[in-house]
Length: 150
Image 1: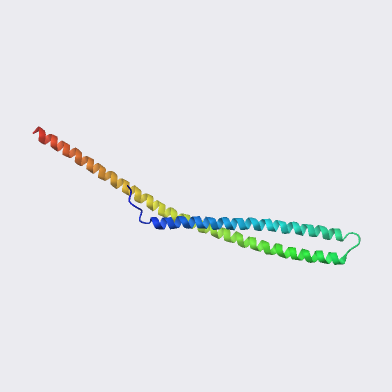
Image 2: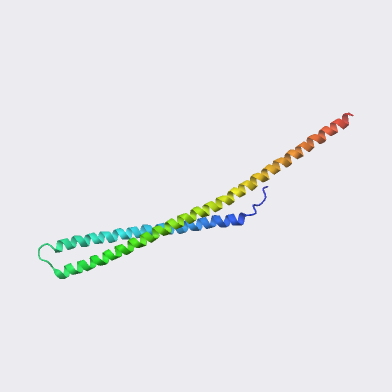
């Protein structure tokens, strides 16, 4: 039976940390997807307003309606700019979280390699012990045979 890895609690912590970071990344990606969907809806709304403004400028012009459409367009354009800024911030957070995950995985992998080296060293030591024991048995048998024959 291999001995317990002395840094196992640290390795467990690091692996748990990776899982937490991946969950956080998933939430950020989900927020980004919702944000993109919302941005598309805003852009669609802007396109409808522009279309409506084009229709209002043909024939009899209703200045009140045109003014209202222009005001709505400004509001939608402002919300689009805000949403694009939110998405840019989310993209930055996602990149940072991905970098955190890479570092965390590298740290955990370093401990895993250390653990594997320790297990390999233990196995080699066990093999050496078994070989020495086997040698001792062969020597004892040979000794008994030579003493028994003499």
